[in-house]
Image (cartoon, rainbow, N blue to C red; front, top):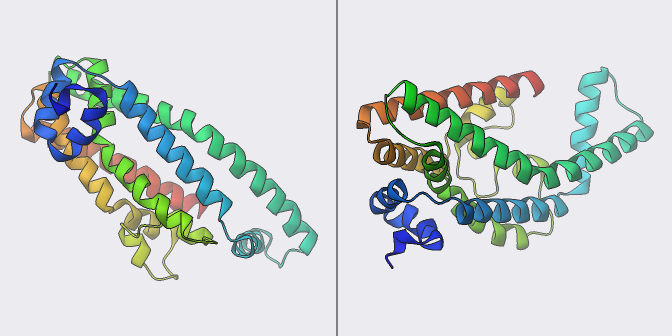
Amino acid sequence: MALEDSGFGRLIGALVSPGRTFRSIAERPTWAVALVALLVVGTITGVLANKRIDPNDMRQTVEKRMEKQLGQRPTPDQVDSQMNIAKKVTAVFIWLAPVASVMFYLLLALLFWLAFRFVAGSELGYKTSFSVLLHAFMPWLVAGLLTLPVILSREHIGVQEAQQGLLASNLAAFAPESAGSALKSLLGSLDFFSLWTLVLLILGYRTAAKSSTGSAVAVILVVWLLYVGIKVGLGALFG
């Protein structure tokens, strides 16, 4: 059996032989192995990183945020109360993250399916769209695997460092501390693994949807720019 014909083989094939892998996916779409791999690595990374968040840095972050919201320095009791809430919310978020990730993948695959079906005029099926999407996200599996040893080698991780990513694979990692949240969100989108994923999305959907390169590039970039715009907007709103 060729590498790109098995579920596990496609995890590697999408990275080292994307052309043949996406042609194979177009003929026989699969999604279970890719989805489980992304969820498992993402969950493990999130849990381990959260356990190593520096409590002193977390407290300072919460205190600064409260001071900005209240317009005055919060009392220690107020900070303690907010810290307890933050810990509970973070714990719930981490364990709900896999469900949120599945919803994200399903909705994004639906968006691409609709775009290629009704805008580009393709006969692409939804299952194929879902399979292409998951395998195009394999660079993030690589990112997660590279992040694990970094986490395990550290006793503590700073809050800002955890938010920007431990691999320093995006421009936000090199932004000055004075940079605003919106700018950091924008710079964070200019990420090596994001750009790698974009290339695979274009190649994968061009192959599976049997569309032109121009149509594939247009659809993928419009959706990505929409995502970046929403991300930057949220960063400006809640930063």
